[in-house]
Structures are given as C-alpha cells and as structure tokens.
Amino acid sequence: MKVFVLAPKENWICDRIVQEWNSHMGHISTPDIQSADVLWLQAGWCWNHIHPAVLKQKKVLLTEHHIVPEKFGKQQQAEFLFRDQFVDAYHVPNKFTAKFIRDWTHKPIHVVGYWFDDSKWFPEDKVSCQELLSLPTDKFIVGSFQRDTEGLTGLPKLEKGPDLFCDYLESLRRPDLHVLLGGWRREYVMHRLKGADIPFTFIEKASNEMLRKMYNACDLYVVASRYEGGPQAIYEAAAMKVPIVSTDMGTAADVLCDNCIIDIPSEVYYPTVQDVNLNFDNVQGYNILRHACEYERVLRKIL
Image (tube, rainbow, N blue to C red):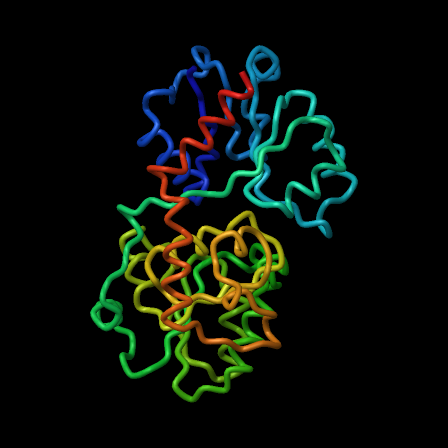
C-alpha cells in the first residue's frame, strides 16, 4: 500500500502533521499521487486541489478536524455533500466531530486521535525557559498559543473561546498573573488584557523549538475552546508535564484526567502534581511511534 497525504501548504499545523507522517511512515508514504493507492486528504478543505478524475480513480480518506455548527450554513452544507461523492471514508479526531458528520454522510467514519512527537515535546526546566524568554520568574505564567481572532476584524473567533479565556484570566484575580501568548491573530485577547490591566508577552509564530520553551515556561496552560479537533496543545502540554485545564471539547477527555476538564470560566482549578503525572501517562498512548499504526490500520481498511 502507498499513501499520498495532501498538505495545505499554509505553514500551519496540518503541514506539520503531514511532515511528521512522511518522516515516520516512509514505508507506505509517497509524494507521487499517481502511484498512490490511497489519497489521505489530511487538510479536507483543500480537497479541490486534486482533479476530480484523480479522486475518482483512488481510494480517498478525508480528515474532518472539526465543524462549527454556527458556521455550517447552506453553502458549507452544499460543499460537504458535493465533496462526499469523492470520499470513501472519513477520519475524525474526536467523538464530537463524528457525531456531527454522521447526519451528513453514509460513508464510514473512523475516530482516531492526533499524535505527538516526543522528539519535539518533552519537559524542560521552567525557570531556565522563563529566563530564556525574558519572562518574569516571580510571576504566575498562564499560556495560550493559538489563533483566535477573526481575520483582521479584531472580533473573537468564538469557537476558540478567546472570550472565555479572558473571562477566566480575570476570574483568577491574581496580582502575580502574567500571560504568555503565542500563535497569531491574538488581537482580541491582547485588547482584553490591556483593558483589564493584565501584563502579557506575545511571541508570534514561534518555531517548534521556541514553542517548546514557551510551554515549559508556563505554570498553567488554558484551553478555553468551544470546538476543536484536538487541539494539539492537549497532547503537547501533557507530554511536557505542563499543568493544563480545558473545556470538555475535542480530544481533551481522551487525554486529560477528569480534574483538568473544567467549566471555563466559572470554575478555577490548579492541577496537582498527580494530575500532571496522570496526563503524562495518558498521552503516551498517542506517541507517534505507537499511534501512527492506528492510522495505517484505517488506511489499509479502506483498501
């Protein structure tokens, strides 16, 4: 079996997933679409980058990371149904996405969570990372590294929960609070933090190595999303033993212990050492060295 994986070439997370797959699964991965037995459209929204005639010739697995119901209007519904004719099976990373698309397709749906690469995401000394990043070592550092503003409008990307994240930070009422922001399009959050007089540091589009330092500099990482595929932060923070709390969405409940799934912003919780160790133990099952075989199993099943 040979598999061609479609990358969006957007310099974002899906491109990294494809790169890691090609690096670790060279025995079945091919860059030649014509020689492939299966096309894995890992960036499902880019399906029309491949000619319909090619899609019809091959077996096609399409990844639907997540769908925001409020944004799934008539145009999105029509495109989903039209695209469905070229798809043999779907991959989704979580039960929420699976439940949603079951109303829109009769094709098989395979629920397989994301992986993490332990050569990239591992614990480091917190104080050393804070010093490297010029962060205050006497403050309580709360991290959030994602895109959560709608384009250039300054409006919150509500599925990512930037409003809930800011509400949560304000509810902490900690005079020693310092927020570490990563990613890009963080305008809404920065505006809110300035208004609440909460100090922050913003590192835009950090490299993976820098991002690892950022995670390890945190006393707490917060995922306040309403809808997600993962997010990757769930796996990465758990693998680096970074205390993390999250809303119950995406794959959070598959990786994090019950204590770390909270009602943001109304509930405040600081993970214990035991929580952190449980998260670390749970995420080991998603190490790419073990977990990629689950994807291979799905791809072979399509054939």
